[in-house]
Length: 293
Image (cartoon, helix red, strand yellow):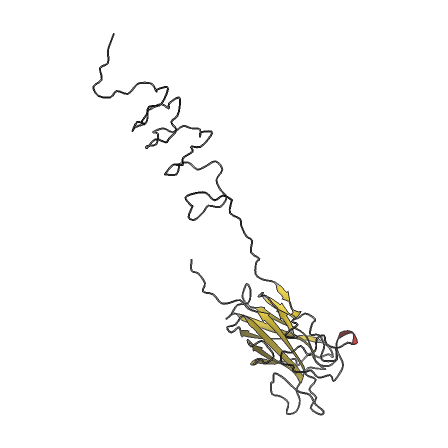
């Protein structure tokens, strides 16, 4: 028989039935029948092809080289050392865009859109002029002006001058923001050919009973060619700084020496201008610095 003599430590050719204590610094070539309760300081040279039925109680200091069979749907950018007690909830935010219909503000007594949107419209809230309105009734909530500027009651509805609707809309995607270009559109009824009917457009960020109006532009509706025909008149301007804005349209009959633009016209006696003035208040988002990716 041959005998093997060992000088120092000798490794057995087969694994031990129970692990040694303390642990060896180098792993054996074959797994032990009874695994140790603590991980070895070095990984095995040839890991098992199948994962263990239950993970170890103590997590490893380094991640495994193989991904988990059931990974999370959304990876974290900076994972925490310990898992959270409950999964992350995804909050869905509403997408910007779409038209918002204004409602009468009880304090301002004018149509108003309270939250920022890509477009704000009075709809039929301002249809008519003064005592003249749809279905033989007066204009709803007349005169629909912040500062109490009044309308003329002369003429007949759907024949004489009147503002039927005002819409302000963003010229860029998303909600209206400070500095954005917007378009203000007035739907009006022009008298006869419309040659002497003009709409003056104004804006303000002082929304209250004493607004300061800034002139945008004047647009006439000449060439309509038929009595009572609706026409859309539009102007464009850039929104100044401020979270609450208002636009005004003053639509009136211009003849003789009455040709200058005005934010408010008083019609009396012979100076009848069939004027209609309406305001629209709307919300604007704050301009923020865009992040560069």
